[in-house]
Amino acid sequence: MRVRNSAAKLFIFIALTLFVSAFSGCGLVDAVVENFSSVVGLSETGTVTTNTAQIRSSYAVVAADLLEVKRGDKLDILDQIEFEKVLWYRVRAGDEDKTEGWIEAQNIITSELLEKSIEIAQENKDLPAQATGQLRAASNLRLSPELSNENLLYRLDNGSTFEIIDWQFVPKVQTLTGDDSANSNREKSKNPDIEAAKDKNEPEKLEDKYDVWYRVRLDPSVSPAPAGWLFGRQVELQVPSDIVFYQSNSRKFVTWQRLDSIATDDKVSHNTSVKISRPGSWVILSRTNEVKARDGVEPEFDGILFLGYDKIRQDHYTIRRIDNVWGLLPLKVDGSGDKRTILIQLLNTEGKMEEKKFTVSREGGGNLRATVPDGIFIESKK
Image (spheres, rainbow, N blue to C red):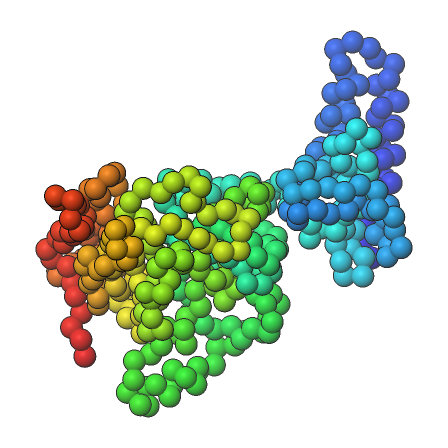
């Protein structure tokens, strides 16, 4: 069992307080107390991460519940102890009684870690969401796309929803047991599926060679930490209901943006488990499951689909489809009404990445039409 040496700190604090108690004016006592609070850790704060949690009278199994706190509540962290391999914080709440007690550390994110999450959010604050997702199992929110004890923020609940801003393909070198625990065994042995594909002269499969990590943005109703990274095996993409059936097993949607306006009441709720949207027109980026790395970098999508919606016939139609491209995020849509500009980062015919500008417009009240720029590299079919 490990605990801070609070008794010694308290003795020093009492001695200092008695020493300055003879002085008056200028707020000297208050200054000493405030400065000393920093020394003993009283200035350290934490934020509740779970929907609800209990501050208890002790860390023992039979302890009494003193106060229920909710996600987003701020607590002063006074002390900590590791009891039976579980870390607990002694905290002080902000209620009228200034309740003090113990709470499991897994229910708290410290101010230091919260600040690091805010820094990640600031890096991408101007980027549009590329997709939305939901956790299919409780999973660790991390500071970087790797399994490590040093980059843990806290554990997100099963069913948590979020916006996906970016993702990375990371070579699959981990053998996992259960969830994305940082204590999982690691190995660098050859993948038998990849080796078998080589023997059969078949293309390598993306899912056999890589794990995907998602950089996500979270709503305050879901998490006090605004951003971080999630292990892709625990993430289910929430493809809008009106287009989900247009994807196939060989080509999955990875990014989508509407090409028409959307009413406020149609926007997805962060507290719902199902993304429901009014049928409309979309630009969709998709990805096959084949490895297509260039200089060690995989494309984040290899297909573009412009999908229109006929309100009279209440049916979708294909505006334009382009497969076998090589592209990277982000996808951006500008404009309003019946004319939209779509900016997509694509490999050009000279082998360089270039931002290509597409336009989708409607003329004479008919179907939408797409204008496609020249110079896009399209891989020849084998």
